[in-house]
Length: 222
Image 1: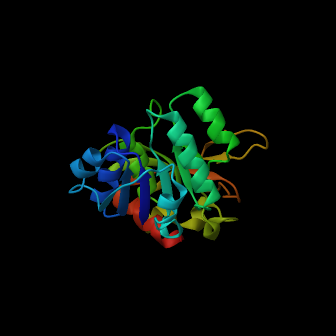
Image 2 (image 1 turned 90 degrees about the horizontal axis):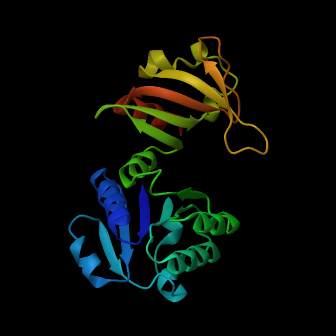
Image 3 (image 1 turned 90 degrees about the vertical axis):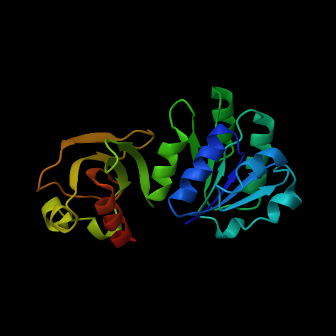
């Protein structure tokens, strides 16, 4: 997958280098040449440009990026301006990093698709979530096992867990499902899943498994 990360401070550089190490193509962008030079060997591509300049930003391959992450933290004005330009240029998935409640509110008003708060989401955790397409969130139990939240793939809608054969095919376990609740960001947890649990459109599945098995399931669900 392809990502563009604006801002190569601690958060942005950690996110970019982790995604690169995972095998993704990453363009790391910063207006300071020293940061660009510092990370040029650890990130697929690094570019020095002013992300508040629409001409400079429009030169980037935004249409090819699976997600654009605004990781600028120390300059909220630059973060907001960069986000506004990305909205204007129709970037298809924008993930913003907010460093205050006001910053979060402004990004929400701008219609940012996802907002990461550094005290809630580490760069490594975000990288792992981006590594799995369709994953809402993830929690690392060990180097090899994760719990992930995943929007129910269309191919499983209407099936029971037994009929989906997720355990049989991929050796993964659906722990529970989260039902959407209109007007609320958080859904309703349905309790411990059983073989008779029916998977419905809009459900979020909470799944436990080995990273390789989870990836196989996600790849087959596309």
